[in-house]
Image 1 (cartoon, rainbow, N blue to C red):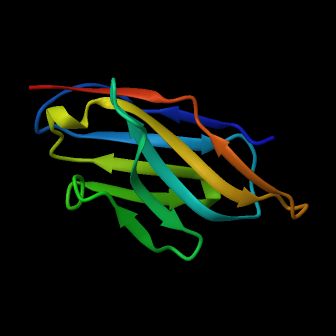
Image 2: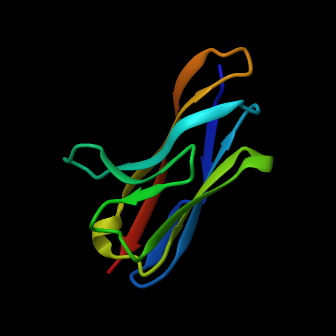
Length: 120
């Protein structure tokens, strides 16, 4: 089973930037969708940004123009560049991948989460 390891979270002042990384423990053949989600205390987990196997991206309205999702296939890593951070962006961020192994087996995996805290 592939494991996703996240990194890059931390404490940042409002207006600052962070880049989150999500690295797969093994190479995968292809993927349907990769996404970044977040969950703030007392709130449901929500989709922040996603990218399809074809390269199309989508963003939550609250982060459009500030966050950028991209991937490095050679490194089996997905990134979330977060700029102009706001206090409201404070949450635990999770990555998710729905993809296929070289065997053709489908999988869906989640990262362990990384805390992002934005001070106002």
